Image 1 (tube, helix red, strand yellow):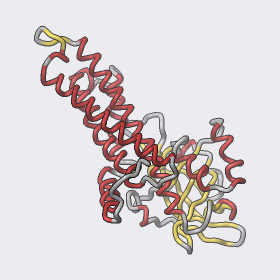
Image 2 (image 1 turned 90 degrees about the horizontal axis):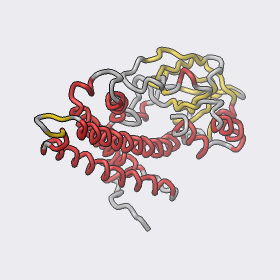
Image 3 (image 1 turned 90 degrees about the vertical axis):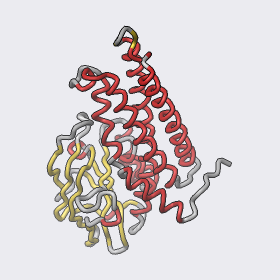
Image 4 (image 1 turned 135 degrees about the vertical axis):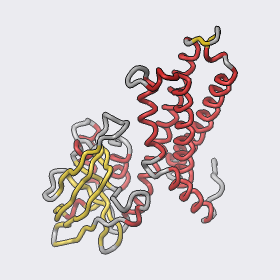
Length: 295
């Protein structure tokens, strides 16, 4: 989160002054960044954003509530989205800004090292220079950040699937049932082959999305394709790997596969659920975004 969408919006859209203030300390790990978009009634539907920012003199006054914000309890600042007179706009809001507080910290099933919490804004005052780019351009900025974030998350899904397959292979060679290694049973050898196929296919789709972003292309359909395919495929692979471990895989902290299984499940939900990725893909197809150029 910190090195992904916590930073990318500042890199892509912030002023030079904002970059100089935040990025060096973020790169050094002195300041932790966060991305504050999701709200109780505006999760996957970012267009329903209700948080408001009103310009008053040389300040903006922000009111609203964000939810499921990663790094919130430890963040130095938030790349935050709020509705202004000109539409959705973006601000860099420091955690110590007057009127900003951290609400409930959620006890999640996985990602135990990454805190997720509410961010509450009650007449939160920030200087006018906290605005990123232009008023009303925030939704465009969010889409670019999410395209990069979804590609990065898809890459992590590929890594999780790869590791799960390697763990299943090692355990399958070590564990013996009915007089032979577990992996020699045809039903499980086929399952391992399917893990490999899914993981390799996902890897190539992720590479395509990353390549397009490197060329400066929007990669909206491609990043959603990568996130959807990699998350769904990885979940199937990780769940299959845990099945190979049997009861041992379900014991807390006994084998690594248990942690990967807990951590990976949310990949089908955050940064836009798998259902939302399909909506995005279908919308792009209807707009004529059908083929990808590799030229």
